Length: 186
Image (cartoon, rainbow, N blue to C red; front, side, top):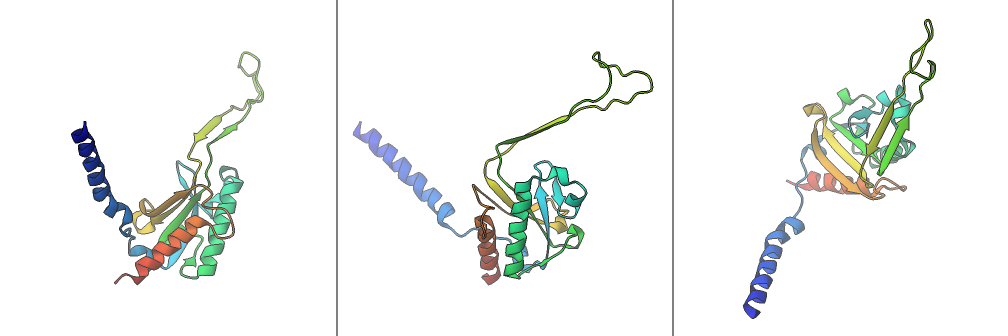
């Protein structure tokens, strides 16, 4: 029995020693974050990124919480002054996308017109219905994409409960600290 305990303890210590450098070591932040000049903002809708300019023509796709989060990030970017904001992702070096945490959301519409059996009388118009359901993490998400890669290459990502709320969103502060660390690197 004592040998079994020693073996388990040795295994635990070995695992901790192997994992410690990965946890305690400095994270590698791409130099591209420090080199970029122009930034565009977007909403992460889960299945697609919707740029701030595109959201004007599709206001129903963006939740009020996401608009508030994006406005908070924009405000902090303007105060920081490191990047120049542009409305067009094609003109940007980076695309910063926000997604407020939510457990689930649903959207439904109703059928108007037609008869009970589902058929519409000749010459009448019937509209169909739809139902969209989404499940997501309860944590807020801030992602930074390299637009040179078509907006598909993630350079930085942070996720945290309440990370996009408040006057100085914690996820933005994490991103800012990582960019400043990358800028100091030789």
